[in-house]
Image 1: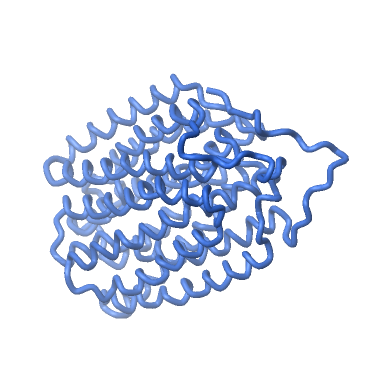
Image 2 (image 1 turned 120 degrees about the vertical axis):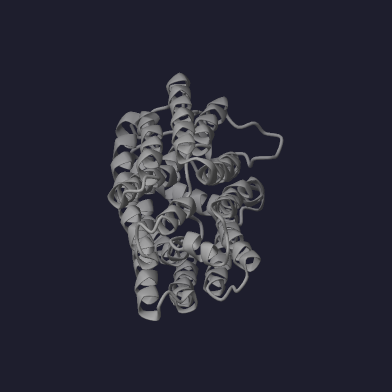
Length: 411
């Protein structure tokens, strides 16, 4: 598999980059701060989704299906939002709309008194991610053309995870103080949500056209249309990603296991999630650094992490389960950073939002399969769950080796 670079040309030493009010690194850091605040919001909520749904009468299968649908919506709907972002070129508007939807829905989740209402809000929050992500990833990818794909996306993801640590810890603290009352625990998340929107508006005013960070101006690249084909290398890479995600459990199922088996108190679940998010940040930085040196071959570690997560996380030993949760965080860190960096290297800039949307749609379907499959197997047989996931990840590893993934454009 080779990266298609016919649309990319190196900047000569005599060329002067287009003026920007913020450097590429400062843009990434500022966008990272927005993501930090929003991860504070939605990761705080996601850390207790399993226990919250269980408290409203959900079974393991229902938790797996709801969280699987949520993740599928967050990814699958990008099949629509990605191409629309490319066609309209209104990347900031799509980003703002998606963040606003998440900021509004999360505080109301704590007030849900019925399982169907809570399930709807869980999915609605994920829809917000679907609306914003292709546009947001495209905006960030422009700056990574200067900083290095792997490092740029890794730093952005690491800042995400600072919020992903603070949010669950905040929720855990409020739960402990209020006797597991979800309303104030989730209501407090309205504050960082509002702050994120304000910061995003400021960033848009400072850098209205991030595309000028690119080595080749976007205006010189033909705009994509629905009839244009994405590179073959992209499709093969998406197949590997989908196979890996189809054998990956959601944290909703994992946290359900923690509570149902009484391995930890409910208030401790967000703390475990926060620790997993800290590991997420470390894994993102490590694999991002390696990606800029050896390319997507570093992704070979992903199937091993996904398989080991299931082997450890669904035991009845609290320490092994926590270890599995930490490995889960490492796998998510790679999924959220290095997987996205590879897409930017595989697809020309004029079709990048479309590619992110299609890529997310494919992996979203696989994520739904993974959530529903692991939840259903958990209710039937944990050993069957473990064996199934290990087999799927072994197949994913074989597919990755067959595809011969590309080297980074910065390698």
